[in-house]
Image (tube, rainbow, N blue to C red; front, side, top):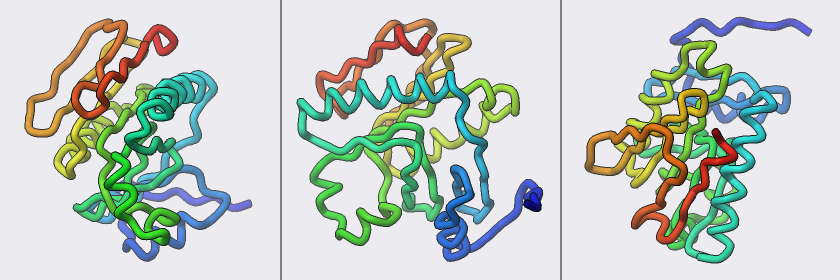
Length: 193
């Protein structure tokens, strides 16, 4: 099997992205608003385990609250600015999800989630992608995400992004509140640290 190296800044059209995304051998890919193709390496065991804990906690809350839908990192959203992004964990209010057509729900949903989590993995730190993740979080907020958490397990820090507010940084929190976006949701970080 031949491998290719995609140069940084390589750009494609949204239609070419759709074709690439349907190729089974590819892992997670994203497309910036400028058309830059981003290929992300597969998740290692530690990050995968922690991501599943995040999804599990949010899913458990969502099953009881019945106010929205939870999505994993394999879901690509088409943001209003045209970027195609795949947050590690996301949630969309049920009314917004139900406004989409079946075709939109089956494809890449053309909307920003209401809530996102990005978990900084060891490979993100190794490949110096932390600043890219911070830029992604800002992009989510600029495109209508109401609440976002960037969780960095090795330093036990969380950056909280809120629509219309400055970023807040928490050091070694034990829990996080879903605030008004996810009423009564409390994320327990003990299994993430």
